[in-house]
Length: 445
Ligand code: HEC
Ligand code: HEC
Ligand SMILES: [Ca+2]
Ligand SMILES: [Ca+2]
Ligand SMILES: [Ca+2]
Image (tube, rainbow, N blue to C red; front, side):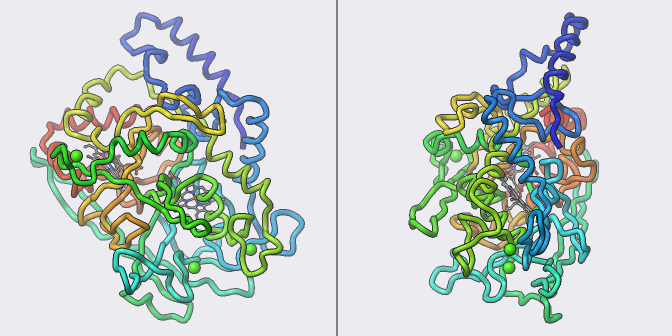
């Protein structure tokens, strides 16, 4: 699925500016370029599928190979095309979980189509309860599908529990949170002492830029002991690489539990689809389901997707101001600069991702009670907010937060507790008009 419409759209925007030049809207060129030179003007349902417009032709070819890899549907061996699925898996292609490169749905069930939600599992380590070990027989992730002749590890059922609350002006709202029931292959329930964490697939555009931010830049925003006393104490996650024992900065996934896009891609292949690869071999190390070319192409694809540009709405200034004044921008840092990166198109860009890539204690409501490397059960990585206004343009029923519990942007904000409690309280104190303005700003991203 490849769209070469970006030039056309850019052209039509230019024309639009020419004919409506004295309009109240901010001209598109005056708006911050969300992804620097990787920004696309496409804000349709294919907004997350554009290659970065500044890729040189060799890189664009590599990106298009990666697109094929990302869409490839695996089947069980032997087969002429894309064999090697499973034996255990959650879904059959990258694209079937990251719908149109956006997020996946928070729905499960024992359907033959594969599931988009993942359930991570672990046991507390006996020597250090803030560390985890794999669960014997289940590993660190439940695979709820299997090829013919094998048995899925579990079935996962999701029900939602509703909870009511109200804004300061008396307007009421409803929040929902998931209740997960895991039934193991032998029909018994997953024992209660096993830690679980439910995660939906996040969008995958703009990630190469996040990879290109220097560690130094990210650590500048960290304040683990809250020395400036603003109630915000972001800290980095650190991942110990299995081969080298080296500790590296985590950046990707909901708890920043993955250090690089090649690592994230390699583990997605093996854990989500049962596809062994040069970075994740199994008992027979002499052969893998895919080769290095396919693995690097898929990772390259996630590194080089364009970031959609902000809309040129005139009614977002008030909301943008509130985003600063009620403290959202303390974690969702509007702008960062990328440093060096092997992919030239990603280097030295001024970008507007609205994240610090750090972990924050988000309180009891969002707690999953499952540590992930250095992240505690209550800590989550500040989600990037670029493109968040396009979530439902890309996928109408898509939802927010790590487990997809928030049906609207308002609900996502209302779940913010812990370090973000003050921001949440201030949001609840806003007038209806100001709440709307803040949401309009988010929708313009
Ligand atoms: C079964 C559904 C599923 C499949 C299949 C899948 N993913 Fe994911 N992906 C997820 C989930 C869920 C997460 C979040 C994981 C977490 O937080 O631990 C994720 C996270 C990611 C991230 C991190 C995004 C970010 O914002 O940090 C990338 C990149 C990614 N996946 C790429 C891929 C690629 C490439 C493939 C195919 C090789 C793939 N995924 C296959 C569900 C899936
Ligand atoms: C203390 C840091 C912090 C502050 C302050 C904060 N956020 Fe967040 N935000 C986060 C984290 C961490 C997440 C991810 C939580 C999760 O998925 O469980 C998040 C998630 C979100 C999401 C959902 C993103 C997605 O992809 O699903 C939205 C929307 C959001 N924040 C908006 C806001 C707004 C608006 C404010 C101000 C009212 C705000 N945040 C204040 C840290 C913060
Ligand atoms: Ca396999
Ligand atoms: Ca497993
Ligand atoms: Ca602080």
